Length: 157
Image 1 (cartoon, rainbow, N blue to C red):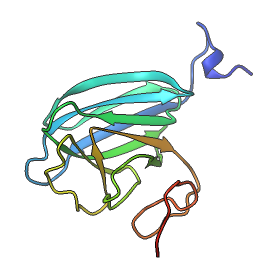
Image 2 (cartoon, rainbow, N blue to C red; image 1 turned 120 degrees about the horizontal axis):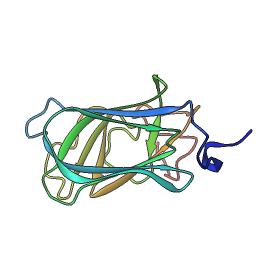
Image 3 (cartoon, rainbow, N blue to C red; image 1 turned 90 degrees about the horizontal axis):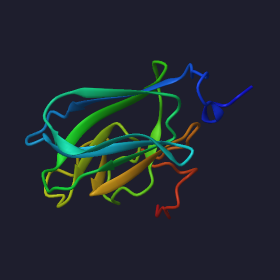
Image 4 (cartoon, rainbow, N blue to C red; image 1 turned 180 degrees about the vertical axis):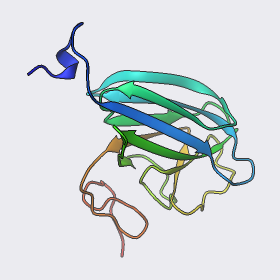
């Protein structure tokens, strides 16, 4: 059996990964963001940063094992994000979000260069300039959504 990364012309993946987003319901939620999908360290899809003021979605063929979000302005954005694979929700966890993030699981994202907006929103991952989320399964999470099994963080209880 040939893997999708080994296909040249004739292979078609039966996996579709879809990212959907909506602007969060908080003041000044619209802003600038870009994102990159990766599979096996290769770029699958890249959207340069742009001003977003509505809902949107992107679908790619194949799995996405990492997603990077970036901004190039201090016009922060608050998004609600869902990633699915063939219609089934997928879990991604932040590797470099700010330590004040209420959650490391992708779902609610605050991305900004100056972080002068609300950074205390329930379930939000706070990202300054750039952050990266990795797909993981079977995670042990603490009450704040932090991944206890896979993180490099030292937790103080």
